[in-house]
Image 1 (tube, one colour):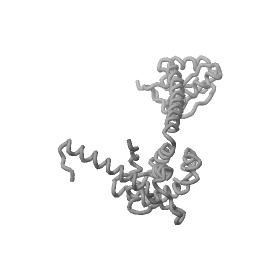
Image 2 (tube, helix red, strand yellow; image 1 turned 90 degrees about the vertical axis):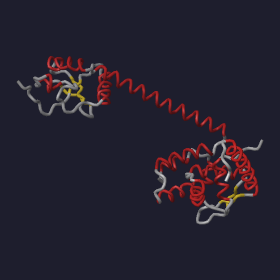
Image 3 (cartoon, one colour; image 1 turned 45 degrees about the vertical axis):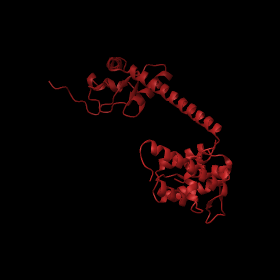
Image 4 (cartoon, chains in turn cyan, purple; image 1 turned 120 degrees about the vertical axis):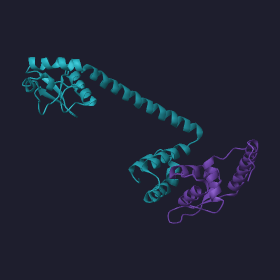
Length: 182
Length: 101
């Protein structure tokens, strides 16, 4: 791994240790890597363990507490983002997306948030007005829409809607509309 | 109460008891006699602590790598630790009904 990552991780070691053992440690890692013995993940974990090991016990505790705080902070931020994603998904439940289609047809010059497989874009609602079959336009598990938006895309669309103070309307682009069989 | 050496310290000192070694040789030797694979980070972390405690010392570098050598204090600390471990091993084995080899 020689690499920038290891060199960056070495910064976790006290300066004295780094200057005394740093080069040897990197060379040994390279030597072991050329033999393919330890995996990259293991080397990273080992480098981190070494950084903890060289510190006095009291400092280790502080290091561990700091790490726990940082990880909890990241986890909290992650859950907040996930909750935002969930709430936006809740906004676009099946019944609501079904209800959105008449809105698309009724206001053809409005702005729709179009969530396709991986992107969110703004589009005039007129392009969906030609879709006579609401079944093809609604994003729902039972519909034959071919590019269903991901949860993240819906969340992104929802956040755009918040910025624009406008409720998001999720529809799916349909490549081929299949007429219902008689 | 004598301070116990950490397990990594015992492994490193035991390896160095045979003669001076550099990092790579230490890792391979420990792997062979103990079945424990130390990584470079933990090895140098443990070496740093042992060197701070004057239990090992670095010899002049050979091809940019320092061989490490056990000191007299290191030998004494290792001896004490192994004796304590031996005592515990003997008592433990006897109590579970196994004869020491």
